[in-house]
Length: 166
Image (cartoon, rainbow, N blue to C red):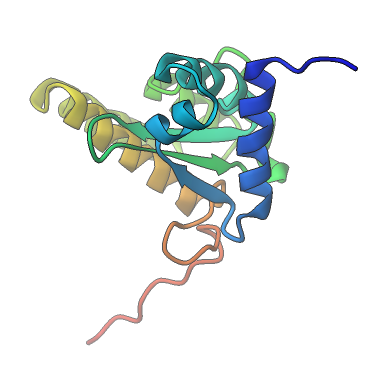
């Protein structure tokens, strides 16, 4: 009998939770996972960075601290492989460039989004600035249909805009 590594156990556990989720995303606590697998939180971070990244078909959002969380979205299968092997989640210019190359965004849209990311980086320092940029990028991916909407459980392309009152 082959002994599975801790990394594989954590990965399989998270994938099972995702498979059971009707929404295509899960929210877990790093501390709770570390306790469940009797490991340190940095081992959870390692699993997220190596097994749940864009090239593997996942988008991860995390917030550290007492009310921190980890949210993992499974990118819809038709979009897997969209991002390059060396895609870095915080490299918004590179990720936007890929979306332009694949025809999901115009150059003008990518320019404006990159401008927003740069302004936030320069004006909002620390974890909150990174948090805002991740939120914005997640909303972009949701609106393009890559991720399921947090509230509705639908992809952005299926979500409906509210009727204009006029």
